[in-house]
Amino acid sequence: MYGKTEYGTLNAVYALLKQVYGLEFYTDTVYEFDSSVPFDYFSVKNTVFNPSIDNVWAMDGAVSSNDSGAVNWEYQRRMGFVNSWQVYNGTPHNFLDAVPYATYGAAHPDWYYEVTATDSGRKFVTLCLASGGEEMAKAVAEYAYTTIIAQDAEGNKKDCFFFGPPDARGWCECAKCDALKSKYGSHAGGYV
Image (cartoon, rainbow, N blue to C red):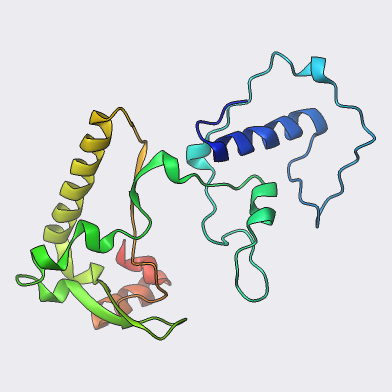
């Protein structure tokens, strides 16, 4: 079984369970697994299980979380939704790495917005995606390109690039961003 990374291998295990036992989802709180059925090794010994880990993503409770909002990782993984941090360039929280205030802040103060996190109440700075236009997009593209080239030079070819907000609960709330949220129904409308 091969899935590029340890998380991919986990997906390969579930690919095997699907083929051998017909299990689309194996989650102990949803389905029961009958261990009395013998495992027929010879029926799968020459089979390759190589799932596309790149396309099996469920981030931070997208599939299931408990009543307090904490992620139920076990449930997610048992349903075959696993992500691997090893398959992409960038980081989930790299807004300010890609567009650092020290580099762009003096010329573009409107690109940055101070937000109060909804969970902790602490203040943090994030990007205002509605104010940067083509110039901010160019800065992000240059950052992505440089990062990808550096990874390729080290022999680490990655298939996708991640660009995401700071690790805090809050988005820019300026009038432009609020308008995009209204238009698209989500704070992520700023990406659009």
